[in-house]
Image (tube, rainbow, N blue to C red; front, side, top):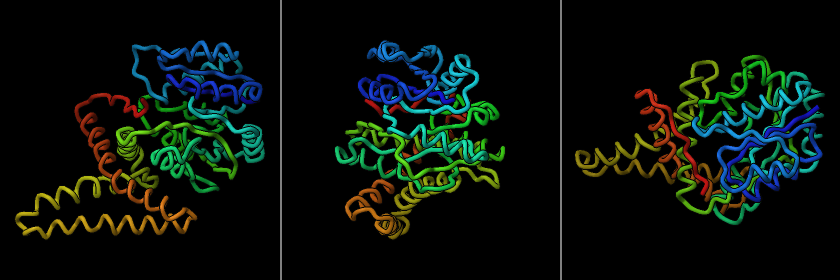
Length: 326
C-alpha cells in the first residue's frame, strides 16, 4: 500500500493540480501546510485530503513539513509500505506511482526511487529553463534524490526521517544516512512530476542559488569526512570561484600592477568547458551557453550562502529559511 505526503505554502492553483493528480491513486494522502494564507488548507480538505497545519511559532522547513506529514500518514495507516513525497508546486505524472512502486517491490535493497522532474514552462523564463536542466540527472543508481521521490516506509523509519533543522538539502542528507545503512537510491528513466517554478526575476534565482550554497556548506560540515565527502567538492569550488579568486584578483591588483586581474580570464575558459560538456550531453548550443554562464555567476551567491552558514554556526544561531518564491 502506498501513501503520499505533499507539502506547500501559498501554492494556489499549483497545489490544486498537485492534489488532483494524486486523488484516487494512493491509499492515503496527507497535505502539510506551512502557514498559507491563500485558502490552500480549505482546498486540500475539499478534495478529501487529510491536512496537517504546522505550528506557526516554530520556524518552517521543508524537512519539518515532510516529517510531520509522514508521522500523520503512519497514524492514519500504519500498514503503508511506501510513501511518495512531493512538493505542492508539482503535478505527479500519470502512471508514476505504479511504476515507482513496482520498482521498489522488485528491488528490495533500494530505499528510494525517483524519475524525471520537468519544468512545466521551461521556455517561459531563462530561470525556469535552468531549473529544467538541473532536474535532468543521470539515469541509474544515484547518491541522492530531490524533493519528489517514492521511499520505502521501513527505510525512512530506520533513519528517523528527515533532519528538521536543515533549511535546504534535506533529501541528499537523508540519502547519505540511508546509504550508510546499506540502502540504495535509483533514478528511473520515467516521467515523474511537472514542477512549476514561476521564477521570473534574477533576484529569485540569486536567492535560490544562495540557499543551495548554504545547503552545500551545511551538508559538507555534517558528512564531509571520508569516505562520504558529501558536497566537499561543491563547497570548495564555490569558495574558490565565488570568493577567493575575485578577492585575490582585486586586492592584489595594485601590488601586481594589474596582473592579478588576469585571474578573471579563468571564468570564460571554465564557461567554455562547461558549455562544450553540455553540448556533448545533447543540449542546444544556446542552452549550453546559458547554463555555463549561470553556473559561473552562481558561484557568488553560492559562496554567500556558505558564508551565511559559517557565520550562523559560529555564532550559535539557527539559519532562517531562504525563500525565493514571490
